[in-house]
Length: 286
Image (tube, rainbow, N blue to C red; front, top):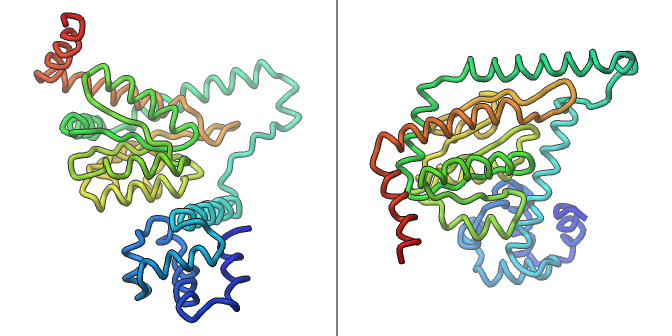
């Protein structure tokens, strides 16, 4: 049962203060996904103990469980909106297309090639270089995304690690992972965020949190209207939709390859690569 339904059902039996807390929660579902206990205490003019007691009376073990349920709720609402706007690419292949399967596959091959060529041709190389320099300057790098984006996070992490740059991947679908890695996001951090349809809300929230925390944000997405765009210091675009799949890896991976190459070029022009190689070599001399 979604959390708003739970709160509405329990509302008649709540105390006056609990109703005040529930009213705020139901009126601000998005804020509830990331609000701290201290912030909520101030917003509803109630002690932290009172809020924790209310969470228990609402049927949840702790405050983090309440936030988790709000994240599920907001995520579902955003997915409903995308379905209503018919933004999902259908994978149903019309029967007439299946009559000449080799011709269909050849057409898809050509579309893939054109998609990659278009992505690389429209890519602003100055932005790629700027992103590479930001990555180089970061004390730590956090790559975040969900689903297929996690695969891209890991690929870029591996490529960049060969240049001696530290990085860690955050799967924005994993609640425990988010809580474990959030403290790492400071003004010394570079966050590389991947967001493609259906634009998972938690990835957007992580990017917004990162921006407020003073971190530098590099956004990698498919369109300028992507939810992460407004929080990104540098935005790199890679069209991802094809006739069969909402998200295709061809173009995004081509863009990532170019970004990783730019990082390697910048590192090679500095003394950072040498120091990293020397540190690794020392492991075998001990």
